[in-house]
Image (tube, rainbow, N blue to C red; front, side):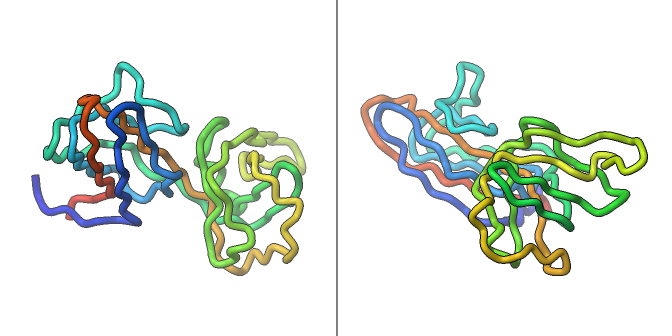
Length: 185
């Protein structure tokens, strides 16, 4: 299997005897996630907080599973238009790595602009004179009350995000589940 290197923050969740639990939104840094539950559970990684579906992966207690979660997506933000929804501009010539419906987070050194997880509402693909050529997107983040002015010279990015949802299979005992993004080194 090879050596693993941890990437980003780790999370430990307590799984109730009956019902399900979800992580908060996690910024996507790696293509794999390591899951180690203390009780048998169904686990699903997706873009919403939901109980795992019937197709979710079953992970047995004390087993460690590595899930492939796809390549992380991110791009630098060079423009930011505040409002009840927020317009994000990427550098000319780069285009958006995101599609409508993707879960994303604004992250960076301008913490007033950082967002909780939100969805991409629109990707502006116009190619005419003055068009955006997929360098502008709209997200469902209400930024209208943010006071400072956005500075494009201070590093800020839009990054893909996800939730890990787990449901106890036992129904009578509780346990923890450990979640960590990893990469092979």
